[in-house]
Length: 111
Length: 114
Image 1 (tube, helix red, strand yellow):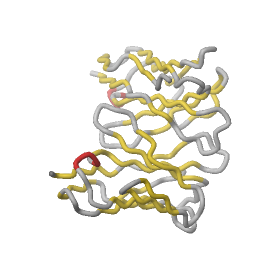
Image 2 (cartoon, chains in turn purple, yellow):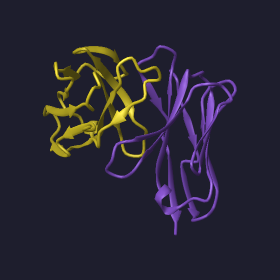
Image 3 (cartoon, rainbow over the protein chains, first blue to last red):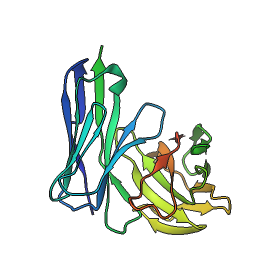
Image 4 (cartoon, chains in turn yellow, purple):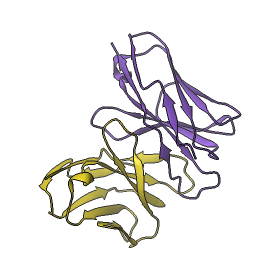
């Protein structure tokens, strides 16, 4: 069974601060996706990383896939209240139809 | 382009009852997956439908069943409801032939079992 561990579970920071969220596994994934979920909504896809060592930037968000494709990180620069939400990582195995999700990191950005 | 829609938004049932949840996939998406998200947890894969057939299943008992229709919409049926079935049920559709199984989620149905 593939498991994804996310840390920290909760994060509360002031507007303007930087933060990093981690997603770790003992399993290799063919791709890893990051989603953001707001209360009462379904998760929304932010990015997919597929190559070991890959770095992708989405405005103030930087996503990195580990060299061994077992872990990933999300770094947010100068966090804003609009970044508040539940950040979920999800991994897909090679040829698999199934996404394995972590438990998520609940981020609160205080104005 | 219409996104993924789900109905109903909220539902309250009692233990032992049966429930049917509905999902309309995003335009052009022929693959639908269902997930269960318990409070404080990430979504857990229930099953996926492609071309009206179950294409894979997670670790859920047979009382969780589904259907997909020719217009790609889908239903999730749960029989003999248990208290632990209380959760947000998410439907997600994906593009045909898409390489990385990227999912487009609906807003979910919040099921409460009393």
